[in-house]
Amino acid sequence: MNGTQISLVAGAGSGFLLIAALGFQAAGYAPCELCILQRWPHVAALAVAGLVWLTGRVRALAVMGMIAAGAAMGLALYHVGVEIAWWQGPAHCSGGVGDLARLSTAELMNRLQAAPVVRCDKVAWRFMGISMAGWNAILSAGLAGLWLLAARRGDKPA
Image (tube, rainbow, N blue to C red; front, side):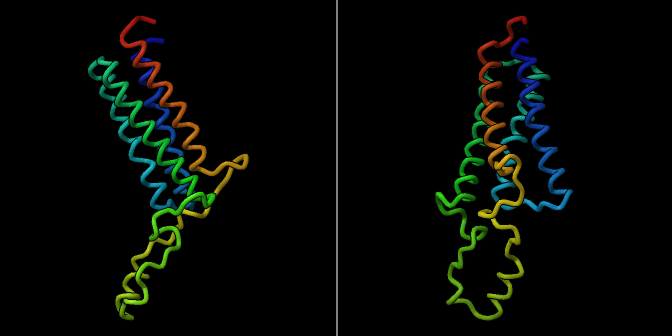
């Protein structure tokens, strides 16, 4: 496979992960804030693959795709760390109470009604003992590797 083909496969991998995330959401697994953040780098990688397809320029674009997949992996690893309590996640989705003692009753009610209902530090689903964030980290690492291979191959024939 040449660099263009590998880029398209990597972009399709990000597209697959986005479809899977939306499928879980449609099945009733509401995403937390960190889950949503992990989707954006895959959107970027998918867009980069589209640019490779449209322009045929592989090397620089594949590096951008690798950065996007690496960002998805980094966010997913951070989320895994929050899930297994290696570090604190964002206070508003990991159970932090913030400045509740200083709020009026009305402000407290407004904050409670606007609060996200899905916690970042609770695993909603596991497969083979690995959470969705864990699978995203593993698969994103593989996609970053594909983007690196695409950058190395460039536009050379297969």
